[in-house]
Amino acid sequence: MLALAACRAPTDDHTKQANAPMELRIYAVPPEQTPNLADALGNALGKMANVTMPAPGKLLVYAPHDAQASISTAIASLGEASPADQKSAQVNLQFWIVDGATGPGSDDAALQPLSTTLDTVRKAMGPLHFRLDQTLAAMASAGQDGSIRASTDAGYARNIDFTVHAVNDNNINLWVRYGDDSGYGLTMLKTQIDAESGHYVVLAQAPGACIPALPGKPVQPCPEKPALRLFIVRADRLPPHA
Image (cartoon, rainbow, N blue to C red; front, side, top):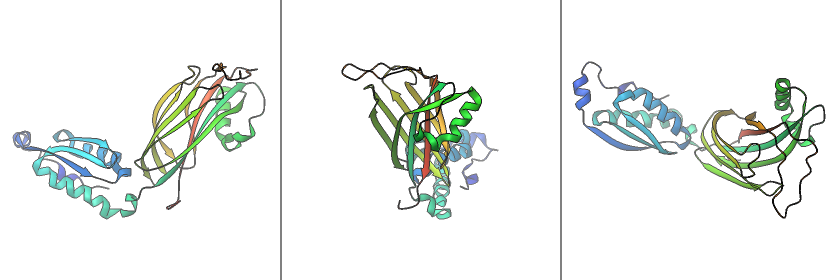
């Protein structure tokens, strides 16, 4: 934890604080720690400074000149206190697009790993059986962006963009943007979550739809209109050098 108390300006001399010369500095920080450091500095410095995060691994701090030395020391202490945290942790991401139809029935065998998650949905919504539409996977390190480009059986483009903001122990701070060009059901999503490594998380639940195929693609049979579509992610922190 950063010791930031020394960064605060004296509270008994407001005139001196207001007239203190300001200075803008760029600090290099561990990419996986950038969001946490930005929050910690912002809370510690309060109204006396402005902290922004232009990119993973960089912090812009606009603060009184006299406070910058304390800020620099506090940031440097992170590396001395926990050098292992500076190593970029790798994360394996699995995304699942799943359709649910009402009534009794069997789930696709490929969905067996998600059975506990799907049972939770059934308890909330009543009898459902689930079919796997698509599963996609990618790998990234803490502080990295990534993209997955794919297409649906009906020929529409499907895109997933993501950023692994930070990895702290088994907690993974993840930003995800999903897009489906079909215009039916779940077509767009932006979200940021703290995911626990090895756990499935339902990022979105949307109405189901029978999606027509693009010209030149075979029409997909839709004997039963899906009641809903789920977008699920699982993030796994990988061992070092995986």
